[in-house]
Amino acid sequence: MVTLKNIDTGVIKNVPTGYSWTTLLFGFFPALFRGDLKWAVIFFIANITIAWFTLGIGALIFNIVFAAFYNKIYIKELMAKRFTYADEKSKNYLLNNGIIQ
Image 1 (cartoon, rainbow, N blue to C red):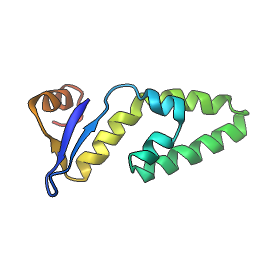
Image 2: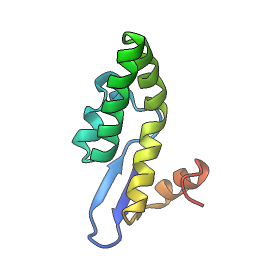
Image 3: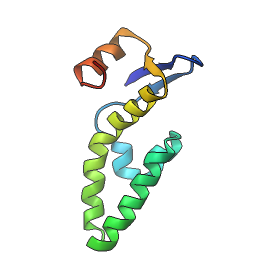
């Protein structure tokens, strides 16, 4: 878990890191509840499309793979919206995992 703070508003968010088990189990709903509408829609459309052509098996594989990357994607989206690390622990995590340079 990293702590990010918005430079403009001072809003602080605790953001999960690593594998997104919630995304694996609940699909696009974690992105939707986080307010990450862009990725919720992308995830939903990709799931429906892949499931249609593979009778659901491909959607399961897509979910497993996407869950591995979603938290990192979400952190990068927040960083693009003027969030930055709020403490040294978060800074070190972001540096060590190549999210910031």
